[in-house]
Image 1: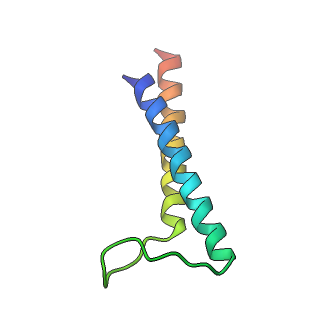
Image 2 (image 1 turned 45 degrees about the horizontal axis):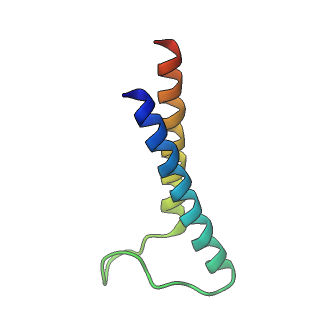
Length: 70
């Protein structure tokens, strides 16, 4: 189970990082994409995806360490 979590967390981290990188490059080029989220609500920024990527990578590391101990 931990190995599955490790693999899923790794790929979710990669996807989140790529989305954050694309949104950041678009913001740097002043080509702001349409806001992601509920109309009239707060938009999701690239920082949300960056923090999500860090969380998934930490999940991957924790799962990997757990499988090595068992």
